[in-house]
Image 1 (cartoon, helix red, strand yellow):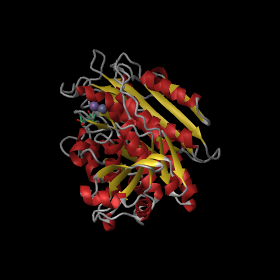
Image 2: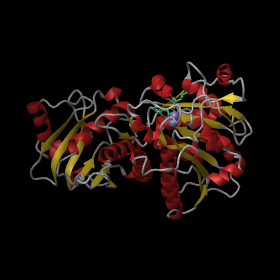
Image 3: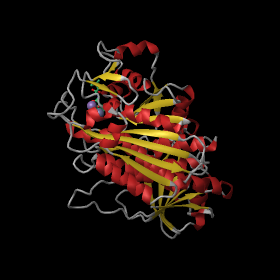
Length: 494
Ligand code: BES
Ligand code: MN
Ligand code: ZN
């Protein structure tokens, strides 16, 4: 889809459809009044005749004769005093549902004077994200493909003074969408296709096709040489070889300390010998969504080329039960030297991540953020709207929370106070890989915190937000690409 700016007078707009805001008292804003005037009050007449609602979440299409445009789509924005990012989301989603399955080819959105509370950047970003979420379709394994929508251009009415900022927002949103779609595709691919080797190939392709990227793939033999006993205790139970995939982006000065993203890339989590129950086990193909969000973010970075150094590390393996798989009670030594008693082979994410986090030390990073579908407990705590953040550094944590708000990809902090640390004490090794009853997301983060003492670090648990479970909307969400991208771009700006 092509997104453009429309700087001209709205009445000159040649378009299949013009989208105008309407408020809950059925009033219009400036551009609406202007069009109404030019079209012999057709809008005000229709509002009365059809009692068109301006409530948030409502939308109504009028057909228009003898103008440069053939339809007007009135989009409810509710009470002007109560407009905010949340109500904007609802309004845009109502707009979105009206343009599906129509023969509209191009659309002009005239929301530039909806409310002083809404910056044009917010409207543009939210619209592009929402429209592209609606258009996303994963049908590569269907013999009958979904027909493509006819809509191919959306223009945003914009004051000349806003042109530069709005142009930058379109580029940002396009890059974000590209990244989210990569994250969705990787997540939705079945485990028999998206293996650790497949992820490594995708990283290689990204690096080959982008400026300032390089890639390193560490094989199991390399990981043995690095004493990554924790990582290998997971990968050894599968015939799919585990990989540590390192993508480096150099957009900053040579000696700028990099920001590092570490992604959990378990391409299928059966639980291992601590086998998971059968119901919904298919969804454990999504256990690589942390890695997918890292790949998606790096794809967006490749498009935007910010002046930053970024390293991403994907810890990828398949967690399977096998004769040579790890057993509960096994003790392994991580690359850091910390010994781990594996009390439950289904707590495998932290085992692959801890060695990747130790590997990150050599970069002397400015910050490290790991992203993982780490605990079912996170869904109990925060449900499916909010990712969890925990870390050893308040500014990294707060910057992630702020980025989430800015990008409307929200996260919330859980505490990892020292009081929780004793839950991972082991009678036989330095630590164990589960924390017992209660606070499962926190004790998982406590485990990771033992390996991140050398740098500012935060952990994002995306178990509830990375995909929509079951039902007709089942599928990867592309989260938290918006949050991560915003976090990095804020680093560039600061
Ligand atoms: N990948 C799962 C976490 C998960 C489960 C994410 C369901 C999303 C939906 C992780 O590897 C896991 O199995 N965690 C265990 C930890 C437990 C054994 C301490 C869990 O959450 O049950
Ligand atoms: Mn597991
Ligand atoms: Zn897992």
